[in-house]
Amino acid sequence: MHVVSLERAGEGSHRTDSRVVRAQAAPQSLCVQAQFGAGAGLALPYAFFSLQNAIVDHTHHSSDPAVAELRGGFTSTRFVLVEPSHPGNVGAAARALKTMGFSRLVLVSPRVPHVQSDPEAIAMASGADDVLASAHVVPTLADALSGVHWSVALTARLREYGPPQWPPRAAAGVAREQAVHGEIALVFGNERTGLSNEDVERCSALAHIPANPAYSSLNLAQAVQVLAYELRTAYLSADEGRSAASTVAQTAAGQGEPAGPRAASDEIESMFTHLESALVALEFLDPANPKKLMSRLRRLFARSGLEREEVNIVRGIAKHILLKTKRPGGDDA
Image (cartoon, rainbow, N blue to C red; front, side, top):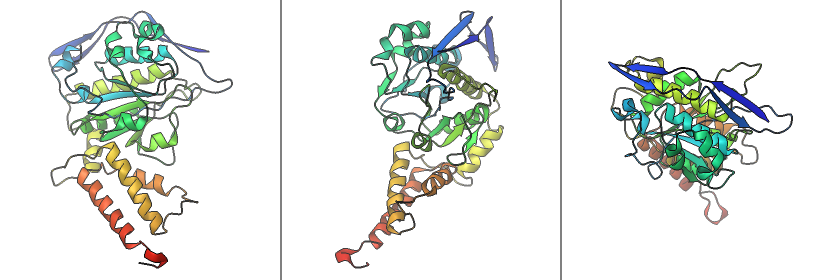
């Protein structure tokens, strides 16, 4: 059993424009518990930014006065926890969200049924009972990301393949720009195992917390708190359009013409399925030995910030490849 204590003292304040938004201090010590397998180091959970109209109610209001006057980021960002094991971590994550002005929490197949009403979760929520009670439960990550146009995963290690990778602050800056275009989400993996490679590849980008390499054991709720803080800072920033992350986002989206509607996560996944079938039909991709082809293509497309029309173009190409490579009667078309 690992016990991590996060000390918080005094009353903090955040200044934006001429307003001062005060954050009431939490109790002097916040203890978050998590259990891990014998001999296994804690893998920092993965996190994703992504959102879904069917799950997220855009009329949901935050209790934060600063958030009440803002549109966009705070109301278009969902935090997704994938298969959380411990009710206490779910409650602590709800508390982490509320302290930063967020309120949308999605749980993907939690290990404890009805975790929102679990006594340990309610105790660890410590006043964020409303965020915990309103958490949505879905069976799969695909369900949680349906309708999302941009997402980012927090990973414990840097990866050779996969989406582009940023530190949390840079990822939050890009998230701010992406939130202008629609729903985004942050999704965290299981406390012990994080997210699978398949889950990571569903995301548009990765974020990595540069913790102490000698002891990088962050609890799930702590990781949520770090990303929620960076997002809050980015969303309340008055320096719009000047950050390096903004430049990256604009470059990725392309300039010179108005951007079209962003493609949703489920639309992008369907595109990859269609494209993979076309590449197999061309015998460019060997299903028995795919190597890293699709992973590299996912990374390529993730850098571009796909619009819906661009996804339709790629699917149109894939469709015609499949039509041309049909072999009626066993003969080449």
